[in-house]
Image (cartoon, rainbow, N blue to C red; front, side, top):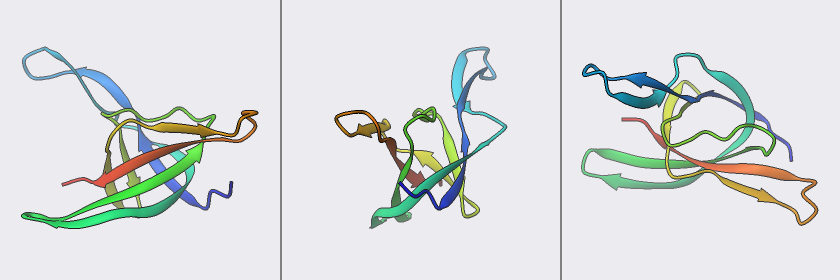
Length: 104
């Protein structure tokens, strides 16, 4: 699979909120990942446009979780739903599919 786009993924880390409770949030340092980004869905909402993008990247890479974030083209995105792993029956080609929503 050709992966022509570069995203910066901010994998989640555990931190404490102001009250000392453990929470997960995007980390401070991003990791550049090669991927393929394509529009998935856009719809008008009361406070603007809700846009989803499907991102495909190498199956050997660590998938982001629900508390991760990504930056692509100077825009910050949130992970929408769990990542899905796809592979052929012999497991010779595998990739992750992640839906990203434009952060508000």
